Image 1 (cartoon, rainbow, N blue to C red):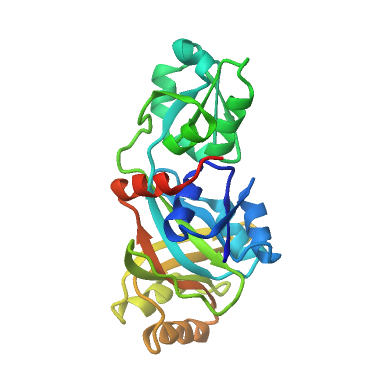
Image 2 (cartoon, rainbow, N blue to C red):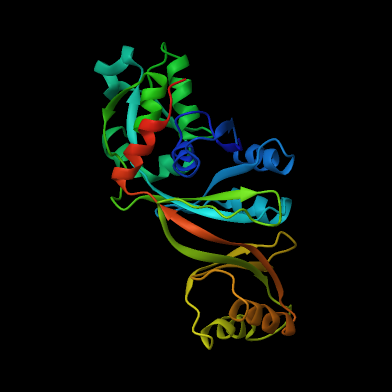
Length: 298
């Protein structure tokens, strides 16, 4: 049986994503994204599932930076999970939830609920946690504090908290992309009924002092009629103004087009690294509820 590392503790959206693709495998929760990625790099688990991007808050830069600067771990799959954020409190404080003085959650979750917090709990302090699950766990373990947590139904069930306000996120179309990582450079082929499409992710660095370099990079994809799903710049951490570009292509690795792009860009003195070519999976809200029911209680 394989082991799956994920951003924990129990009750996180990452656990939902991991369970969707690996329903019968052993799971190991890590307290932070770096710890999870370090864990698979050290061989503690066979696969790791970490968040990469949210439709409201954008990329999870910590994940991107670790994959690009710290470890050479191929992406072998992607899971998109619909996100519904709820305000939950300890059962002792259910009747006085409007008086909570502190709300805990992951920075992205707090940002996703900005309007609710400003309009309904304007005087409440927000504090960051490593995950929505760890925020719920803190509230459970501190019943004497009039505090709340932002998280999902699974977290409320896991830690015995009461949901006092449902769906407090600012936008309805709230989804998060999670990526599946593997240590071996020969990717395992993942299959799932939630399959939707294939994707290839590249990291490209431009040659210095080369006018029009980015235009030429994009042209290499354009004339081959390759659809780009995303292009994002991230600092190289070598000096101001130095960036690399993360590009998602709507196709899996082939023998002609992607190798052709790579060769053309390298001829322009660009650095090219393929982070992964992988299947994409997506959970509908109905499927997410099915997955949650398969997750055992602690």
